[in-house]
Image 1 (cartoon, rainbow, N blue to C red):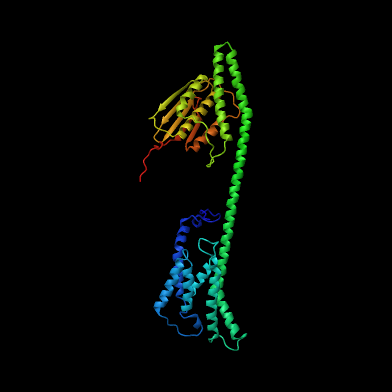
Image 2 (cartoon, rainbow, N blue to C red):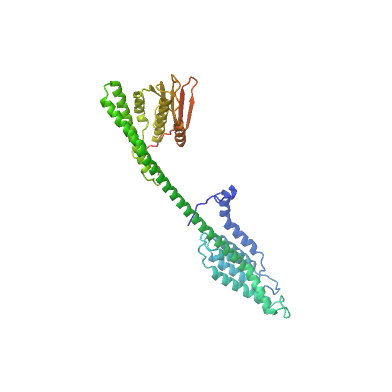
Length: 428
């Protein structure tokens, strides 16, 4: 199983798995290993292991020494692709010239497993047994038939030769092989811990999604039972008042309340539908009805004028195509600003300015000062906070401040690059 390089806590940035230094070291490692094996192979007795302790002057052909060193280095350099060349050439170089560097590296990779596949040990134990035999028997034979041991030593010549052979096997084959086994076991433990952490993270994410869906359904039920019921009663009473009253002005106001209430009910149904709907794969809730855009801005202004708020619209700049997401954000800015004017200032002259820029859209809503200070409204200010967050998600900014004459100004700058044409030709 392949995993993306994640950040390791506690390590500096230049040692993280995704850093350039680590990637460069991973790329240079085979070359460094091959050069190291080639260089260390030069420090060898240059005689077969059968004559290791005979004291015979070694004078092998330089061509054979060079070929053995080069073959050992190249086989170590390609260890990530295949291990058997290093296994075979290391034993051949040992039997010919007692070159230990290649045997040391091959024993380590026999225990550590295949590079990139730590769960697959491959021919680990066969190589260990064959290498231990080919290292131990010639060294023990050379120790017994040389001046290194003598007849009167403690334990005898055979025991001394056995201990000498075991020492060379342990240092040349056993130590790197055991270290490779430890590295492979550590890799497997880390792999299991990583799989377990990912599984726990997935389960936690699923539990959070279930909890969020349950909470959304609970909120939808509460809104339906409380808010929808109250709005429906408001619309019902407004309709009854429109029919029963004899005053034309009162009937007109009742009709406006009934129409506004029906629109609120429609928007509330859409919100409840999105709350009840399951999330999509990307975590977004589906939209069941088109959201209002700049094309619906005049209808919003007409509704505000019908409610008694004198509003005028000013367009500046050259109109251009604007993405729908930016249009929806601009519409919500105007809607929230007009709602605040009606709540805090009353029926005062208000100007809505829409300015098209090259890479953005500027929406400004400013109202005149109220004739008398408006009473404080409970839980006010939350609309501007939500509006600021909505515009920030679109990559824009919002300014809301009082004017010097006592009025108020809400200005939002929304990024709006022109949308790409749907039938754009793709270069081959």
